[in-house]
Length: 274
Image 1 (spheres, rainbow, N blue to C red):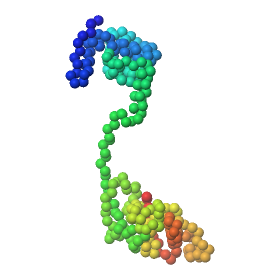
Image 2: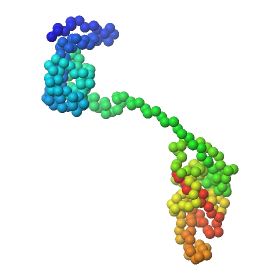
Image 3: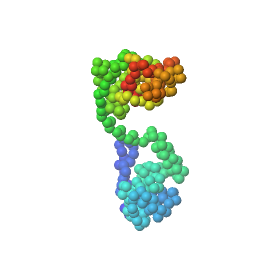
Image 4: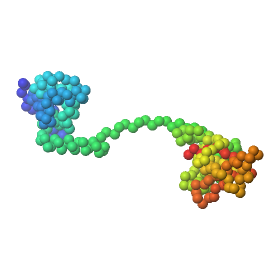
């Protein structure tokens, strides 16, 4: 075994000595440190072999014997696996011969402190942010007539402007947009809110739709009910079939429902999607 070199070259500014590989090798520092860590952990050489295999390091029992005898040294990836298996928190400091030693309790506290730092998330590397996807836009028709205003001719060419929207913000099935006017559908739909509409001429009870009733446009909840006895005759057709009465409901309780009479001019323009 070679004698360790006597003189070490100090760092001029840091006041530290340079790492000297020949000295470390001569003193078999890595071998001693692996043995000490293994024994401190209470792990046999055979058990260390198993722990390394779990970390994708396939080595024979004889290799571990040679490491601890100072005859060979593990490569970088093997050494990192040893540190992980034996819970060596700071490999750089631990495998330096001049590093200050900690007893078992000190090493346990160091390991706990390291785990706490990692768990906090404040001292771990920030993962690179994913590249932002380019935003796709789509042009959609928007009625210049608000619901609850005007004649209800929402899609007349004179009442339509084309506007660009992020594609992700337009619901599937939307055909046009219209603005809410007034507070009759609060708290769900607010004054001046833009809503998306799918063009259709039939709705189910509970659907929110855009309607034209006697020439006025409305955003209301669609409902059906049996007509009152006094109105039943008005809802009988020529075959004597009694039809249900259509009622347009407001969410705001201060507004009375609007009843669609057989004599009313009534049209379903579409179903609100949001």
